[in-house]
Image: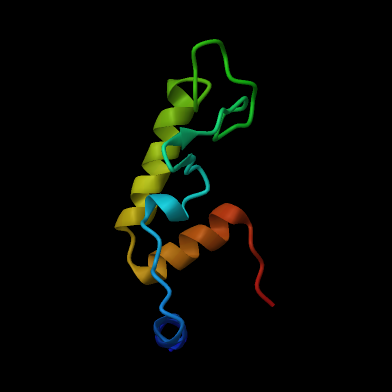
Length: 91
């Protein structure tokens, strides 16, 4: 019901839905410009010399596997995953 309500509201104001990548926290490309990172996307440690997004393979693999799980999840599993992963608490 909430999705239908939001879809109707977006249609009324002619809003367009962003792409999957544009909706992600780690999305950094806009109009061809890269935003320089100084910290790992996953663990937030300073990036070693020559690394541009992750401090190492462990963080890169874990981050990408998590994104794939989110992309492949159905709605119910996705909600549970996000709530548990991000630590949200609903009253």
